[in-house]
Image (cartoon, one colour):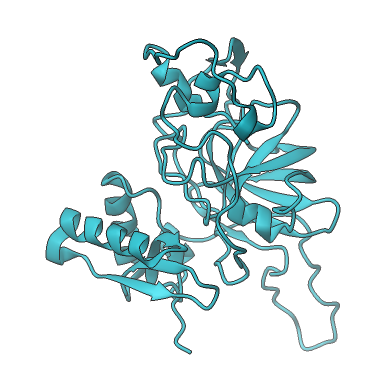
Amino acid sequence: MKAKLALLLLAGSSLLLSGCMSTKHVLGQDDIDYDKASGGGRYTILQDHAPTGDIKVDHLPDLVPKWEPKSRGGNKSPYEVWGKKYWVMDSAKGYTAEGTASWYGKKFHGHKTSNGEIYDMYAFSAAHKSLPLPTYLKVTNLDNGRSVIVRANDRGPFHGDRLIDLSYAAAARLDYHKKGLARVRIEAITPSQNEVYQPASVAAPVVVTPVVSAPAPVVTTPVAVPVPTQEVVENTAFSHLQVGAFSAEASAERLKTRLFEAFDADIKVMVNHQSDGLYKVLVGPYIEAADLTLWQSKLEQAGFGRPVRVALIAN
């Protein structure tokens, strides 16, 4: 569903083909550049598709936007894909747009994104052509009113006039994963270093006098509320870091083994089987928010992507 900026890194590679290989059997049309479809041989799947079986995403925790520095990778401006140049914005502050959203799934699952992280189709992420990476976005499906907060860490989509590519999980949250495309509105959420995002349903605390007063107005747009220190923003309900989610237990166990190989006895890892059939690889538990932050950084630096903070609730 999308072309990766990382394909440019493979431009110097050569792929020996006998004649012009037809991709009609996998792409449904003729005259498709096989090198583009396979990422120069990087992807074994030529046509992107959804994971096997239906997945449920209502149990996935919502992302909590926070200030992050720009990624070292993925922010070069301008950059070029398929002969066309694109410019990266200096800042996402105030950015809003409406257009067509697509999604990308299994073809890219487990591969690097444009900023060097690992794409997880079961996490809430996105690809955008010009926003700085990373950028948090509120995405609303204009056809049904459903919304989700995603973290843009990739470049694309480079097909047609599409505005944004969402991960499969985000598309499922917006209920267009079976349709493929949706009309959406996207709004950038850009907290500063001393601010924490508060969802629209949470009103700021109001000091009232004993007399009857009107209720505090409900905030209708994403806002960033100042707090004294960054430590206050940590949600103490979070106890684990989700490193991956898989439909096959064997895949989850392989990731668990990789984590032990990387960190030995220093890390606490478990595989949690969810009611929707997914096997979640969790690191923890940790009582202190500082420990969550520390291990989030360690895992990212070790090449395991950016883990998501979750609260594990016993049934």
